[in-house]
Image 1 (cartoon, rainbow, N blue to C red):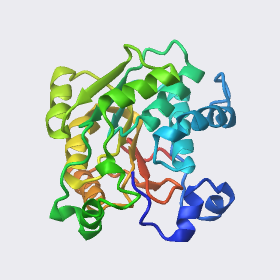
Image 2: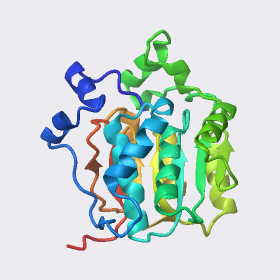
Image 3: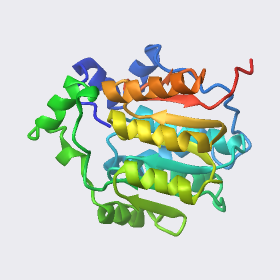
Length: 270
């Protein structure tokens, strides 16, 4: 979620300088992603229509948002079953991008959008999250602090209303992940997830989401870890989970220099 600690030349790339980003060997295509030429909108038109609409509601650079649009196109094109889930919503920009992309491609889709957040900011940093994370949370006057990443539920709902996507298919879960995420799984054990977007920043937040929600991700579903390259605890939680579960997933870079993703596949297919 947070990019202000990056070197200045990388910060320029994050402002949407696509030519510079393409020159960097940081992005790999999603394994198994199929073309979406048979859908009602091309990749370029979807990106051009959606990103400007949600730009005020997200810290994620344009390149990260572009990948998110492409991920939605991919799971729809491959007919991967499941809903869209985001853990760590802030003002709702990324969640809105997923829903707007889906509406553009499949207006009558029955997929739900599940949004988990405390809507009270981030929990306290722990030592496992690393000294950089602690410095960030202590620097309350920094322009990148964003009130500890706080945005109220009412604000997110207002943003969704303004975008025309606030309806019964959007489900909000207010509270700390350690409570709301396990409760959701207990109440919805048969649920399927096509895209799981994790933006909880810290070790414990990432860990509890993976432990509870990863088993619900469909085969060939996409798991996006927003702060994999940013915070030590986030990366550690991902590595620990993959190791403990014996999962061979490749961690792939998104060209925003902060985020990563994995495709849930039991084995390489090619």
